[in-house]
Image (cartoon, rainbow, N blue to C red):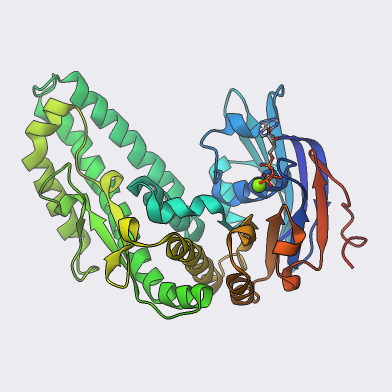
Length: 389
Ligand SMILES: Nc1ncnc2c1ncn2[C@@H]1O[C@H](COP(=O)(O)OP(=O)(O)OP(=O)(O)O)[C@@H](O)[C@H]1O
Ligand SMILES: [Mg+2]
C-alpha cells in the first residue's frame, strides 16, 4: 500500500503531499481539479505508464522541465521510499531508499490497478488496447517483462526499417541480415505469445466470477487468444487458438518461422512485419458472441470492470508485494445504484482502495468514510489523522 505521496511539478500540482491509510479513501473535487492526476502519479510508479497519456511530456507541469513523484510504499512492516524524476529531455531518473536504480526496477515496489471510463476501449476499442492490457498485467506480475517488451519493440522497429529500405528486394547484406532479425523477433515474440496465452488461461476462471459480481447475473464470459501467426490472411483478424495452451515453445517458434517465410515476399513489398504478437488480439465473448460489436454499452462496461477486477484478483492471489492498490477513477458516476453497491462489495477485501469522484454521493458509503478534497492542484486536507469523520 501507499502511505505517503509527494508531488513536484506533476500535471497541475506544483507541490503537494498526502498521507494515506489502509482501506478506502475518496478524493473529491469538481471537474479538472487534479483528482485523476493524483492517482495517475500513484499508478505511474507501478506501471511506468499512464492510463490516459502516452508520453511523459503531458505529465510534467506546464512550464517545468521535470516532475518528481515520491512515495512511501509499504509491504507488511517494510517501507520503501520510491522516487522518480520525469525529465522533459533526457532519461528519467529513479531512486529507491536514496539509491539510484534503473527506472524499470520501480514496478518491483509498487502495484496498482486502475478502473476508469477509458477501460471501455478494452471491449470496444482496437486490438492494441487489449494487447496493452495483457502486457501491463504481465509486467505487474513479473517486472522482468518490461525489458522483453522493450526488446521486442526495438527488434520490430529495426526489422521494419530493414524491410522498408529493401524496397521489395532482399536487403543488401543479403538474406542473412534479415535472418538475424527474424531469429530475434521469433525468440522474443514466442516468449510474449506464450506468456499472454498463459495469462489469458489464468484470467478465464476469474472473469466469469467477476462479471457475476459486477453485473449481478450469470453470463458466460470467454477469453481466447487470437494469434496472427495462425491467420491465413495477414490483414484479416488474428485467428483464435482452438483449445489454447496446447502449444510448446518449439511449436510456436516453428509456426512463427514458417509464417515469416510464407510472408517474406509481401513483407518486403510492404515494408512491415506482418506476423507476431504486435498483431495479436484477445477475443472476449459474452454469451457466445464477441463482445466487440455485439455487447450493449452496459454489458461492455461490466466486462471492462470484470477484466480489471480479475486482474486485481490475480495479483492479490500471487501477492508478490501485497495487494495491488485499487484505483477507481470516476467509475461510480457511470454505474447505476445496484452496480455501485456490487462493485464496492466485490473489492472490499483489498487492502487499499482509492476512489475519485466529482460528486461524493455517487460513491457508496462504505468507500466514502475518509474524504480528501482537491481544488485546483491543491490537496485541501492533507493530514491523514485529521481527515475523515
Ligand atoms: N502537464 C500539465 N501541466 C499543467 N496542468 C495540467 C497538465 N496536465 C493536465 N493539467 C490540468 O490538470 C487538470 C486536470 O486534472 P484532472 O484530470 O486530475 O481532473 P479531475 O479532477 O480528475 O477532473 P474530472 O472530474 O473532470 O475527471 C486540467 O485542468 C488540466 O488542464
Ligand atoms: Mg478525473
